Image (cartoon, rainbow, N blue to C red):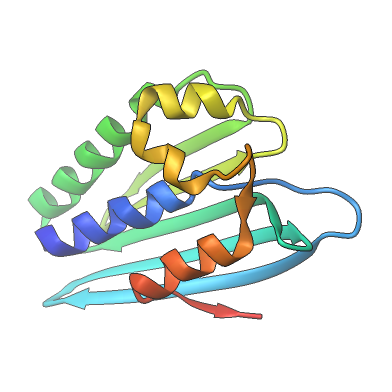
Length: 151
């Protein structure tokens, strides 16, 4: 379970990558991880124009019958995203239901303050090149953690 949470955090950090305009294309990427009775599903909608990613909206959900697993996941996600609270064009929401915790993240990288993201976590800098997120960088990262995209 800890490995799934670690991978989830990596995937959500990658979601710190993008927004949309005219002429944009959209692709959907997904991953499902199962550990015993726990299931993490993730869907990433990526908008891009050419090689530049403009927006990503991700929804990641942990379904479990173990209340402590759900609470641990919710707590880790809350801690992960708390520093980003109040940043314009960076929106997240954590929803709890009986057997599920879902995190929705929506980032507009054409408008978000990239320097602010990097100041919160210097690791964010690896996603940006010349102030932009490149589709090839994102797809390489997704591939490395087992996310499959429908192009």
